[in-house]
Amino acid sequence: MSFSRQAQFKKLADSYDICVIGGGATGAGVALDATLRGYKVIVIERGDFASQTSSKSTKLVHGGVRYLEQAVKNLDWQQFKMVYKALHERKIMLQNAPHLAHPLALLTPCYSWFDRAYYRIGMWLYDKIAGATNLKDSRGLNKKEIQKEVPALNLKKIVGGILYYDGQMNDSRYALSILQEAERLGATVLNYTELSSFTCSHKSLKIKEVLVKDLIGNKEFQFNVRAVVNATGPFTDKIRKLANPNLQERMKVSRGAHIVLEKKFWPGDTALLIPKTDDGRVVFLLPWRGYVLVGTTDDADKLSENPIIFEEEKTYLLEYFNRFALEKASPSDIKAGFVGLRPLLQVQLQTAMQADTKSIVRDHEVEVDRRSKLVSIMGGKWTTYRIMAEDTLDILEAEVLHVPKSPCLTKNHPIMGGEHFDADLFLNSKILTSETRRHLYETYGSLAPRVIEFCQNIPKGTELLLDGLPYLQGEIDYLKKHEMATCWDDVVNRRWGIGLRDEALGRKLEDKKKEAFASIS
Image 1: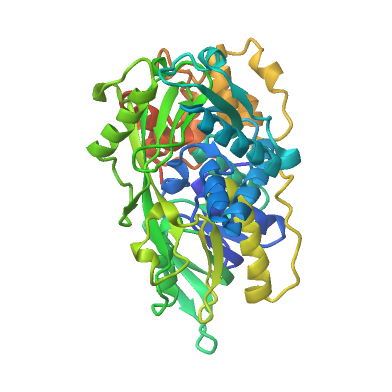
Image 2: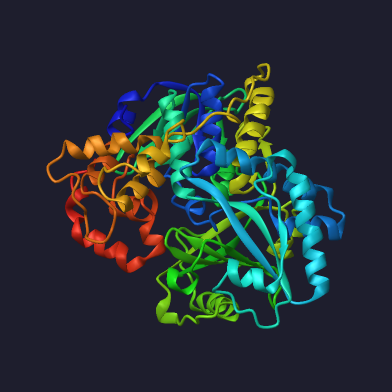
């Protein structure tokens, strides 16, 4: 088994049943579902896998407490259905990749007895909607219990709180692992490969051929297709217009900005949900892989690649952190900051352009262009990626391939690394250091022993890349040969993710081994 670019190019065929454009959460989900249904699939991604929105989320696997509140206040059945679907998908995500997703306790502080009753009822309803898939029942806490559960919280004016449970995930690796599983089952998967153009049938105008360019090898190649799925998130409209210039734009994007602080500012394992801010947003304070993640904003934005965080966003998030934390942080304490562009589906095309992004439903829609038969999956969020893929394939089979619906098999299908594995035995073993064992399990899951074996066969492969960090020198070669990493950005920001948590540490690692990717092709 080799998940390398060279191996994928050797697999290239003249024709495929389905071409998936986009290697983020949605595209990965479509690829796995389609492959499990027996289709011959190719995935193309113009950057690295999950390099845009899918690696820059708030790292939560959740139903959406805010959406439930809006559903109840506005008697909005669509919002309610979205929460229901997400809550039931939450447990599936945790089950299928236990090394990449886990339950997370979150506290909602209350500053009046009314708020305490209001949020208690809300969280009780949240639990009931989850039903048998609920992770753990929510409960009310008094001030003394809060102090024990969240010692970093400023208790001034607090009368109590509600503790509830959602999930937390390693988003970029989750997407990669879905793609690895699809590839293991037969899919061809390529990063740094850009869509150049479509060729359509002269008679029907349906897409029949896809022309793509390998951005690293600087070569073009083409293949025939029966169907094309556009799963490019915020960039959906670009692909839609390439297939049919007459289509009206459907997407709106909002900025989700985050800052990262050292763990010392928020010790413990319990997160904080701030349900009320001065401008109506929701802000989270989350323990995250040895750091503290603070986010997120929700402002309308223009489409761009790799948006940078603004100083005013850092100031806004830092101010809210300091309102609630006992130990105050300063701008110099910010270890990293990142922004993800969220794809929001415009339901009412004429009025949505003026709409506040916080009020737009982040559910999804599958569109089939009547002329080109391009299938576009639009909107949605990380937690519902699997349902989005299932809906996409169901509609594709009915309206493009014109075949009977085949069963979706992804619900109980572990993704790469999520297979049954005695994690406790591995973590309690005497192999390497406990920190490295923890890193290997939380990164590779059941493949961790295989990674160690690979490193053992390389000179100095099991030596640490940098003292004080758990990363092994041999992992660099492993990531190149088995995870399609082509540059340091792929490793630092996505395969390991340290660059999004600590920019200075990411640069230090890069300086240590910057020649490692000189020969990638």
